Length: 94
Image (cartoon, rainbow, N blue to C red; front, side, top):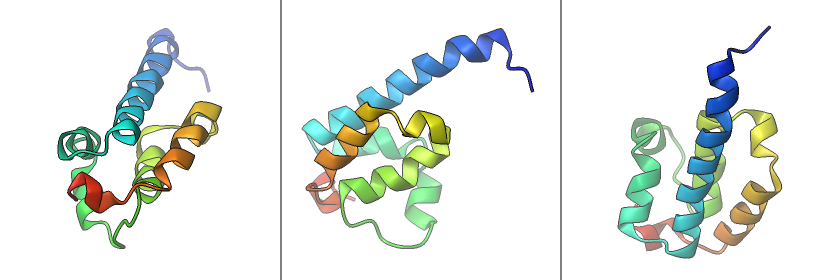
């Protein structure tokens, strides 16, 4: 399957934007930073089943909605997930 040239250009931009949004929440787990994350998948996150206890749970739930499995294996995302393992989602107001 061939990808369109637009997709090849857009994916790195999209991945970088997602990384920055998640990184911002990891640095400052505030209501506004959490809202930035959840606005892309609020319905799935809030109505999707099990409660999310830490930031890593949130990211584990969100990343598959936004990124390919190959994109999720990026070392930067892994480092952010590790940082978020110590962040309570309730700190972000969820």
